[in-house]
Image 1 (cartoon, rainbow, N blue to C red):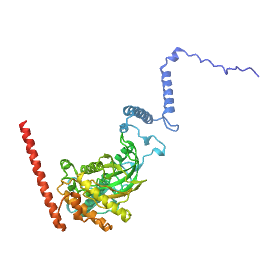
Image 2 (image 1 turned 60 degrees about the vertical axis):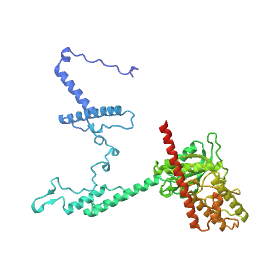
Image 3 (image 1 turned 120 degrees about the horizontal axis):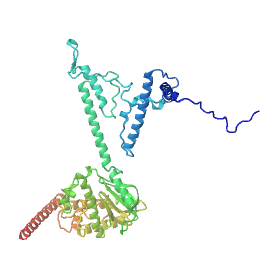
Length: 486
């Protein structure tokens, strides 16, 4: 059986060799070749590779050097770019490309992402710089009909992406210059029209909708706590869109529980013919001439805010101003539980309530003219609400002072609207338009003919305007003399 060592087989000592064998050059050369061949075979060669050729060995060594160079280049690229979002690639300086040393099908080059797409239609050849090819009878110039036709077909690829040009090159389509130019003009026109429509949609307040800037202002009101939330559109008009909102808190001012946001439309179409209400108003006359059309809309909102403040101060029922932000005016809500008060035209009133409403309107028009020094200028059954047994005035952005060059004409128009509505409603006590005008204004114009009545009003406005111009000149002269004296 024999005894075995627990530490395994004993290690045999190396056979001693003489110093002469160690110093032998032949032995050193033999050991060097064995180590070199073993290193190359283990690390650079495939098992089936032939290593007997010096050319193959050189190519393998060069490939390994290229790999080492690429690895170092990747380190330099990573160090250079760091954590920057914009990186610079050293890919063009690499010696070995990914698809050359990858056996995975996932790393293969996608031909659709390269410039050399084998499925891409071949573009027609163009004539050289000299302008012609061939000789003698076979000469073809750059003005040849077929060459120009194919060239125009290829140029259709430069049209906008939304234009579907099809595979004209594959069909060998030849477009004449006339047809190509007509198509190009049409595409350019449609592109400009699309851009205009997109810009109008982005920068204008449409029906029951707001543009991004207006929406941002509304969100800021909610974030600031002025409003709790914005519920939805309750009314639309020619000039504005009205939204219902729940009130929040604003500094020390008490915000009503229910509010409305009057968003003046930023489209200019409705304001082109309404500048007469503001350009001759002395309160805004100087600012009106210096503003661009878009800022004039903000001036309308500011004008309504000042008019509402003046009317509220006189005790006339109207919405209370909460805050003004550019072209958005926040006011108290006339109604209850998200239900707006009906317009006087839509309100179902008994004969007694209609008579009561008439006398309220008559009293409010007198106070508006005499106490507030204002003319509504657009008063009708559409701009009066009926709420809690009371008439309320709304929409006063166009209201002007009686000193306006057309102030009395606007007052006469308001009186005609009011008198016509209540007479049709069956109010026997309703005054005629001429009597109502004299009652509200305090003037005594005697005429039963509308044309004659308006002529006297225009003459009175002319005298008032001349008087104001004269006073203005006297004031300017006085100021000039005082300046010279100083």
